[in-house]
Length: 351
Ligand code: NAD
Ligand code: ZN
Image (cartoon, rainbow, N blue to C red; front, side):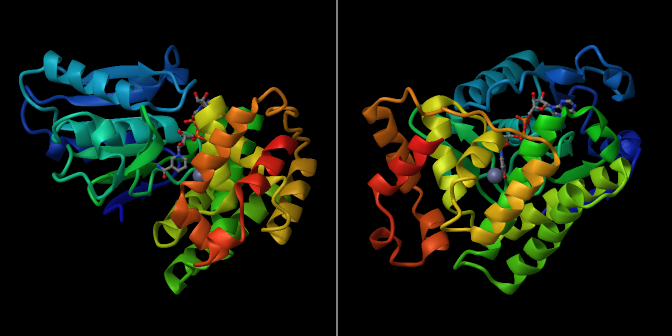
């Protein structure tokens, strides 16, 4: 679990007092990895730069890649004689995962691709702080940093991955565009559905998952003021992330990974594209999802897989079926007898 967290509007201002005791010396800087959306805004005036601290703006146009992490690590090692005092990630799931991965690879040798998997990271990373600017993925609380690698899209899952400190300041959410707000918010809703409907469910996951599910209903189906909705979605993301930390996601995530691997579809919208066709697995969740889409006038793109070749569809299904724990959670220990490559291809063809 994340050992330290502050929450509240304006809480970002406490960053200087939070970081002060963690600065090792004037040669060991803090590195801020910031979503390029904030380049040209006044955010940099609120970042307490000292000595050789550096802000690096990174585009979230594409999801994070192992080679990008490796290049950043090489740059930081070349730029400074000492290891940084810490890495601060400011942005959505893309930047939060990138910052976690960079913090880990500064102290673990080799390429980030070597650590895609479970508990392969051997040493603690640098001190790292996560500051979400869009809510839903739960990346601020999870023990994984999802990266696209040369062979697979898979996270660096380890006890060292989790942030040392998180700052939850709902003021960051004001500028998120509506569609993106919905897609990333639905990531959280789908985490809850997949966790609560899964066979891995236990009392720990259920308690967080139910809370996040109710918060999502308030945010996406209730009529609450915008500021309150921002705060509630931020906490829904947190609880949704906590829920899957002790269970697993399911069919939508497995299939969305396949889509993303072949077509580079982003996580939030990819989950939505798949989830709309999963009523046989999650009838109640899909019904609520449709209501939420209607209420917010969201229309998903169509024909995404229309031009896919048979080989591409096969690859999507293969990647999806490769995620055994997700299927076992969704369908139970005999999952292989309950789902086939052909079933998945039929769903992909509808997207
Ligand atoms: P994102 O980080 O990719 O950002 C989506 C878009 O929103 C980008 O264009 C970004 O610039 C913009 N944006 C972010 N904050 C903004 C703000 N305050 N105002 C205006 N625009 C803003 O989106 P995401 O959905 O948060 O993250 C997706 C990524 O998260 C994927 O790479 C996925 O693999 C990862 N993920 C990780 C976990 C985990 O547990 N580590 C869980 C789920 C998803
Ligand atoms: Zn997700």
